[in-house]
Length: 116
Ligand SMILES: [Zn+2]
Image 1 (tube, rainbow, N blue to C red):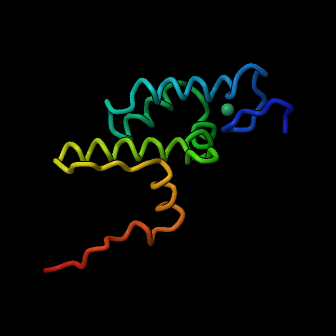
Image 2 (image 1 turned 120 degrees about the vertical axis):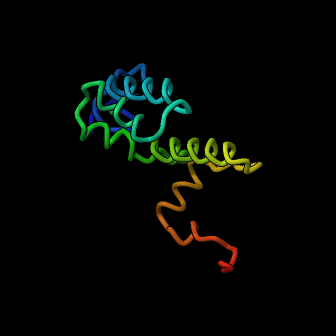
């Protein structure tokens, strides 16, 4: 591992920054588009940067200690926006909730019985 490794992709970064140039550029795209577009469009915008698809995948899926992955953070934001949009109050899903469900889908099951 390089002496100064990017917190996400582990490639060499500047000693003055937490992320490498690619991840910084990808973060800027996420910041600019989050809450404005859906997940597919957001991924398209990330790929339009010209950064390799594999690198975009690493950027989205790398787990940050205590924060979940970038994709978890995006999913949490989109879920909260969607819930608010359909009138669900006090939906406050965090990236760590998403991470927990992703790692163990049993947490995603409904606690309510299905009545038909
Ligand atoms: Zn990086």
